[in-house]
Length: 307
Image 1 (tube, rainbow, N blue to C red):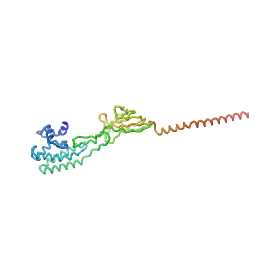
Image 2 (tube, rainbow, N blue to C red):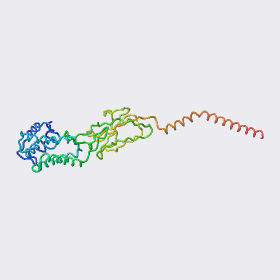
Image 3 (tube, one colour):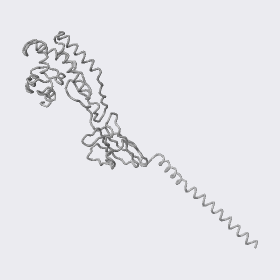
Image 4 (cartoon, one colour):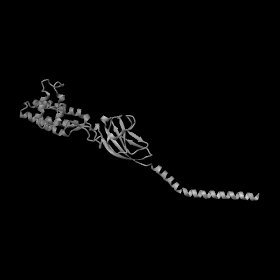
């Protein structure tokens, strides 16, 4: 919990640019934050409570315990409630912070020019206009994989949130014949860094996702996103994108391997039928040979008689 407060308040610690030396210390800010029940988290993400307290003091001219000061703080909180729905891509967090801080600075500049309620509504309108120009983060694509591009920053929690998917994809059934090549692909439907290392593994005769049962297939650390098997063997093929400590996804293919291809089976059936017909062929050949031998003997006997 303490690290979360430091994350929120660190940009405003004494000694940072723009902070007066006489400002309160870190623990005073934490105490002030706990003194403001119901403060919406979105304000805590980018603007510390001390800034809002100073803003309301400058606007109302009243001390912290004055009802007018508390009314100002409550108005800021209520105005920030709709921002709970704001979610931006992780790369847009800095832009979101600048939008919120610019709105607070706008209020400071307007304190002597317009009523506070009017300036506050204008500031909120400016926030929504600027938010509409931010790029949307890519959607999470199920069912598996760590997807950095889809990470978002939630204004309601002041946190970066990843897609809640496991690294392991469901096992896919692949059907193949023992005497024909098959190609497996380790591509994924979401964006990945270029030249990402890929590892192929195999668990023979098993349908499993237990990495302890796999053996790494020989090959380069940065191979292509496909693997071609010339003689498939039953078992599970797995591929891992990324290094072991920072994997993005793991895909699994269970190889259902049958005896042979259709062409091979047809050839075997043709030869088998020929073998079944072989006795017929053999009988016919025997009769033909006997007839030829009889004609030859008769011819020899006729020549001897003539002599």
